[in-house]
Length: 133
Image: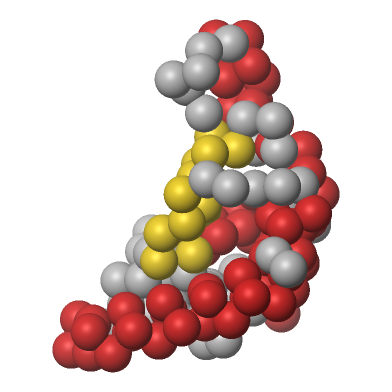
């Protein structure tokens, strides 16, 4: 995320801020708390959705056929269905004083979108109640 943060800080405009997308966590790095702390001064929006760490299991988290396919797996799941460290995520947001926009960002469950939306809202509130005391 460092190049994006450098650009945002160079532009130095209140209209240009950073969005941290939790389902992209493992593409950015492995230390969620450190990444959020690093972005704290320009962080304005977070997307909340779970995903699996594609680098786990020696990079073999996903088995795709045929071998060598150029397919890419991209998931935005309900909280608890993947491996994003939610206590680190929400705890760090509270610790850095985040008060920006928080959006549920799940698109894995078209057949149960309403249920997913209600579930995500409740889970997000649970973490907010826990960490923003």
